Image (cartoon, rainbow, N blue to C red; front, side, top):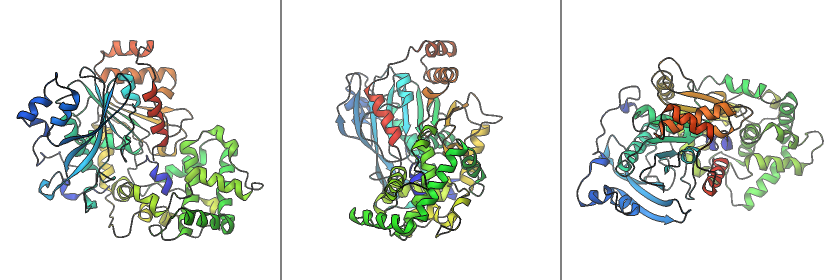
Length: 490
C-alpha cells in the first residue's frame, strides 16, 4: 500500500462533534471577506497592483513573487487558518497557497492537490481551458502547513473543506468572476468534499481520478479489477514478476537493505526492512497500472529468465527503493492518517503470492503500518457514506474523469437520482493521468463545453461552439509544467 497510497494522489478523521451528516453550522470565526478598514480598501481596489491587493487581505501574507510568462504573475503566500474552525480559540497555523494571476476579468480555478504545495508555476487543465486565474492550496497538516504541536484529530476532511471555503471567500474580494474547483486523485477527492460542505463556493468542479471508498470493509471491486485489467498475458507476466521478487527475497532484499543503509534510511515506522520490502513488492502491480499503459507490458521482466539486476531495477522503477523508509513516509503521514481514519484504503486478493509472504496481507497493507505508532487512529465509517450520499442525491455541476486501467477507478463516484448537471467520463485504456483532453473526441468536446459554460465564458450553445471549434487558449510552457506535476503527483 505504501507507494500506491502516496500516489493517491491518491489520497480522515471525522470529529463526531462536527456532525458530518447534518447541515453545515455557521463558523465561529468572522467571515474573512467581510473585513473592512484601510487594508480592506486596497484589497478591494481594482486599480491597485495585484501583489498589494493580495497582501492587504487580512490574514494573507505574500512571501514571494516568482517569474513566469508574460501573461501571468505568480505568488506564493500564507494564510492564517484556525487549527479547529469550530473552536478557533485553540490557535492558528499558516497555510501555504499560490496564486497564478491572469486578470480580474477572468474566471478563477481553485486547485486542491491534496498534498504538499508545488511551488513552480503551472496550469491545471481547467485553468488552461478557461484561460483563468489559478489558486492552489497546500492540504492542512502537510508540512509546512501544520500546527506545532500537531493535534491530528484536526486533520479531517471537514476542517480541510473549511480551509478552502475561507480562502475562496477571502479571494473573492479580488476575483469576482466565476470560480471552478479542481483536483486530481486525493485532490479530486478534496474538491468533492469541499463541495459537499460548501456547495455554493464555486460554479462547478472537475474532479480527476478520484476514488470513492464508501464501504472500507468491502473491497471486492479491486480484486475484480486486477482479474480483468489488460490482457491475460500482461496480467500473468506482472503476477509472475511480483512473485519472483519474493521468491528471490534472500538476494534482492539484501541489496534493498544495503541501498537503504547507504541512503541513511531507517524503518521504525513499518517495523523492519523485511516488512518494508514486502510492502513494496505488494505495490508493484498496482503502481504499474496506475502510471503505465498496456504497451509497457513488454518491459515487464520475465520471471523465469530475468536476472536479479533486471528484477531489482523493475522493482525500483515501480515503487522506489527508499519509498517505505521513515524518511520517505514522514512526508505522507497526513495522507496515511486520513486513509486510516476517514478515506478508507483498498485491499485485494493475491493468491499467486501464497507461500512466499512473511506477513498477513491486510495487516501489512493498511494505513496503520505507515503512521508512527504514537499517533492514535480510529476509523469513522460514516464519513465516506455521507459524501457518497451527497454526490448521488444532491450534487450539482461536477465532472468526474477516470481512466479505464487505473486501479483507483475501481471504486468511483457514481451519480444518482437528485444529482444535477453532473457527469462521469472514462478514458479508454487510461491510467491515473487521465483528463478531458484524453477522452474520445465527442466526450472531450462535451466536457470542455461544460467547463466553459460553468466558467461563465458562454451560454450552453456558445460553449459547445467554442469547444467544437477548439477556440481555446493554446497549449504553452505553463501547461507542460502542469502535466509534469500531474505525472509526478504522489
